[in-house]
Image (cartoon, rainbow, N blue to C red; front, side, top):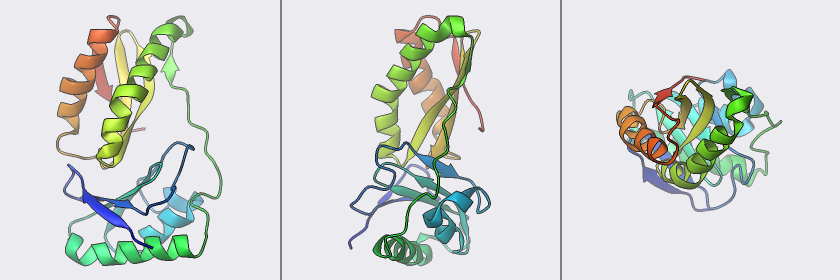
Length: 186
């Protein structure tokens, strides 16, 4: 099994591409600690490695964030070994599915929310996934779109600029009801 690695805009995070489906069409999963990762044998295995602070599972990739104590030169072989061992054993990526919340919004704004979600899905998510992360709609109230960044994008130094200058400008252009975009933690 050959696993490619790619750097991400977040220097603490590497993207691992195992050459097979990770989550496939089942969305994404973001684990900020070992406790949150209990429903994922793969993420749990990665959290047993010293210095791992976040694991994100995408359609065909895994992003792993480390605390900087050892550095990626030391950590990369350990992470590669854990991922390879997991897939070679044929273990599931997730033990159970978790339903994704639809977000907080006024039902009267359902049409606007659908436009926002369509733009996020078609224009933003592919670019963010290319960097090893994801962006999730969390709500729309009084012209403010609330988004949650996951994976490599969570904690990335350029994430605020991406949200304000990229996502917010694009949404305001196509959806005049959007006044601003805010990042939320969950």
